[in-house]
Amino acid sequence: MLVFLQFMLRGTVAFIATVATWLISFFTFEQTYLLSSLFAIIGGVVVYYSVKQMTKFSYLRRIGLSKREYKFIDNNLQEAKNKISRLNKALLSIRSIDQARQNFEIIRTVKKIYSNTKKEPKRFYQAEGFYYNHLDSLVELAEKFAFLSSQPVKNREMMEALRDTRITIAILGETVKKDLYIMLDDDIDTLHYELDVAKRSISKSKKNDWRVLK
Picture 1 (tube, rainbow, N blue to C red):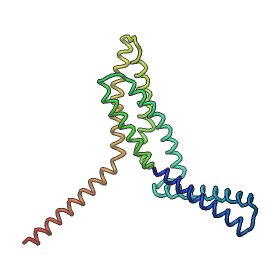
Picture 2: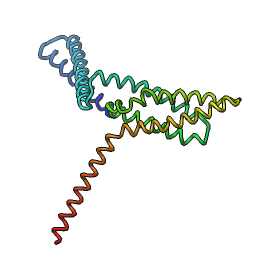
Picture 3: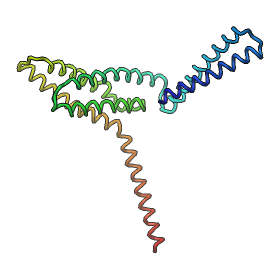
Picture 4: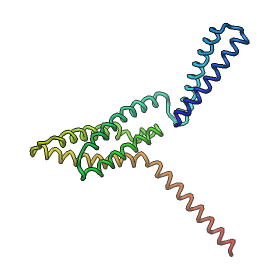
């Protein structure tokens, strides 16, 4: 929604600049219709991209990242999005009632880590273990497990491999939950602080009320 509103803002400003440039060129400087139109188009394009850059600079300043850092994180998020799509497809293709709840929890946790980072890119540094290791391992194991479990014939070795893989996926599921906890650690500390302040304020208010009643 925010991206759409920013696009509308840039488009509106650029349109106004285009019209204003044409009117000034045609009536004030008495340029031809074609030249006025050319200047208007150039002016509109320049204003559009200028507003875009200003908006981006303001956004980067607000989230505390440099242009290089943001590009680096954005590239990682694009890769992660593809991996999460593969993971979602693999886990949902596993026809096991016993694993359904576990797989749902894994998908929900993974998507929450991604959405938190997408909303606040700086959180990427709090979940580097997830993006660099745990997500890759989950995708590879889930895809291999989904492939092998779909085969009509399974020998003892395959069954043992599937069991071990299922256990490892469960362990990784708990690991990504810890990744989410780490990401939210600062928020939890802030919440505890705010709760302490609120409790002290309530306690002080009650003492003042008691003194008034006396």
